[in-house]
Length: 315
Image (cartoon, rainbow, N blue to C red; front, side):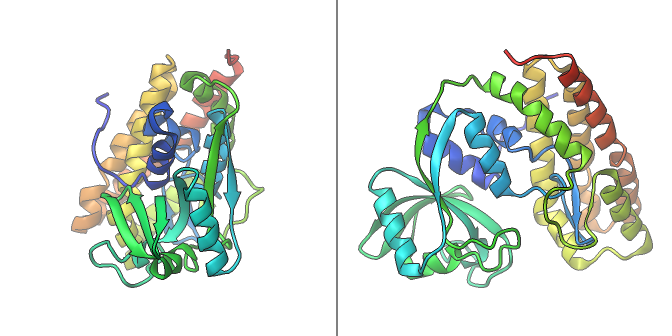
């Protein structure tokens, strides 16, 4: 397997790597520790995302940060003025991981200006003279926004998985030395739980996970019922980030010598990446067939990881 290197929608992992600086592991390790590669969900029965049933980036960050031996302060809420004051004070001590934000309201991005329900994360460097200075991992180092405009995006009113406004993480402290390989090994039981389908997290009615989600999506394609919104999400985001997550997780598990699950993750990545052309070209026959191929791989991966967990003890 050739590991992918290049651009992609890895906003929260890239932001965490930025705030950690030279001590940060690779974004591949961070993304794998969030648990995002280990599942698939069809939200409300219509919107496909190649991450686990009930998972979201906030849960992912809350898993990855302690897995790396770190703690931080997570703040949220309050009025706009209170949030900006809190952000200013935190930036005086170091960079701040801010988000989720509404990506469509980040006005320095081309084509922005309208909320589109897309979540995003950035690293805020300073709040000076009413201006926010930030690194946006979507290709915008040292971007700036007037503070009120930044706050409008930071309010995250259109981000579906959070009721919190003005979320930020700061004051990162290392509590213990943690080797990335050990962190990855210790995360495997959680990966199995994600693949098995957790039932302790809120999801919209009609949501599906795992093979059932992929089969239902394939049925929609076969019947001509795939919505324009779902096709757009697949073609502009879900396939890209999903295939990269799986490729990175394969590399991470391969580095641990876990050949069977690494091979399955690589297979998933290749199938999923192959959905891009039929999705955007409208070749629904090929799209349906590839989804049918993908569906059973999630249970196979769960079984392989269960065996790995049963026969290994983290050092």
